[in-house]
Image 1 (cartoon, rainbow, N blue to C red):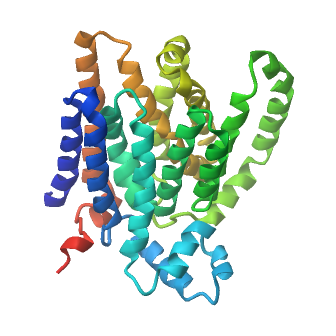
Image 2 (image 1 turned 45 degrees about the vertical axis):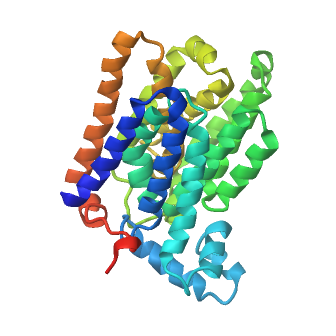
Length: 348
């Protein structure tokens, strides 16, 4: 329970940030991201796949050459392990990976209407579970957040660069490149591309079983199972549906992020549908599409008057807090790999 108190304390610190004036959010967000960088990056024996990553860490460092590590991990993660690992603790690798996660999170959230509310939503799963359990995927997520920030500002070269960086840590990040056509196809041209989209969807469903086998063989973080994947898809689907039901509102509220959110919403609902047949595939990608949660909820709240906004906001916060407490109390993985939190800074 003592270690669970650490997670609750961080959640409470983020909650305090909501009470600050909006002009102070960026400084407070930066402070919390630095705290989280040391909390996540210097963790010791924490995370569902610590032993799996430790094995890869040793295996890649003692590989005969850098190219031979590509069969173990993507080039970016392999580079860190081959050239930095072995002579230094694995904390150096984790810290660098965590740096990219929180750099992306900070840049993306500071551009949102309510950064501290978004951070609160990100804490239970995106940071505590994903950030501390899926190191490669969490690093890719940081680069994806940077990429989405740049494409929202119509910086397409920077967007492609950061997606490539993300794919250097987790190749599934390339799925985010599919957002590009949404920026170049207007409503008139969409009809021309509709047959191609339909054919692509049919081919996808024909090959669905082979894709699932491919991702299971890929074996990302196999020790930490994809249990609860359906619930995570539902958590993505709810804000996605709210977004699609209020398109005009979101187009006026956040015009530059509208296309990003539209893609994330459609993708989240698509992954929910295919999760019944393609569980491994959809669960891997669903972690990237969880960005829809930290984006939509704060904007959706602004639709209401202050009198209604406060209870609704507290209801959303309570849901994520209950979700976090329930997971820590009932998950076998949390009990073995999260609750007894240890940090390199405080080891004897």
